[in-house]
Length: 294
Image 1: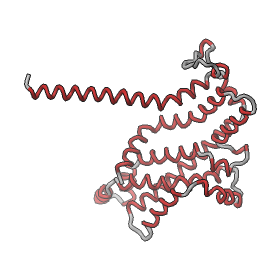
Image 2: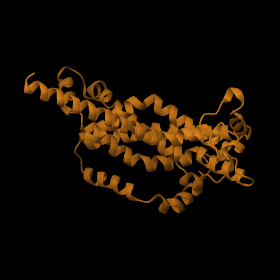
Image 3: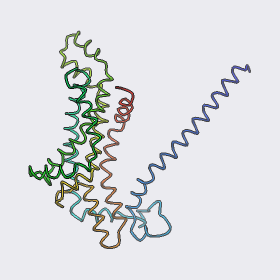
Image 4: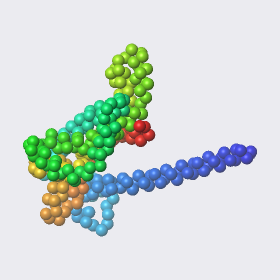
């Protein structure tokens, strides 16, 4: 066997070994990241007595009484979960749709056109992102109270949109700037108008960016707690994070039932997990694309 072939075989062997090592490391890291989610779901199926035991139960046996859905039933019997779920879903939908609309138009404007004040507008976007949210609470509360929008979907949605839109513009700007304008110009040479060229050529290429930006807007509005705590003081107008805090506090009046708390946390997390499963393919390509374009 020639020396060249031996070197080639050794090179492939080292490559295969490195690939196996990296795969094992990746699996370990994934398991570490996934374990809290697994433990939350696992604990939601166990009674507080089992959870208090010094011997952990990693696989509850639902068929033989080793676990049950009683904790989930208790959460639903409280009567306040479904209204909070509806509130959060409605707010998230409004924020995602409005943010994508405004951010998309703004990203196209600053990427495709040169106009007076363009640089100042971009700097303003960055400056808004630097403002601490805690410093705006008093002003936000007084503003919402002055226009009678406390404890309303519209009021909290406006505040969420104002906080999410700047970063969403910055994210989409990278995607728009990464698509050559020459594609639209070539389509216009073939007889399309500027609007038709944009909608038929450029807009489909922006789908990954829109999905990634929509995921960001969804997560921000779904998980936000502090602003909602300020402008939604009424218990009847709670989002899921506020409802979960109230649920834990009500459990704390006696011994905390961690099984019920984990069941409530699982119910809050399920819509996010489902949303990720639906868009994860587009979201991954979108995040990678946004990181290298612009």
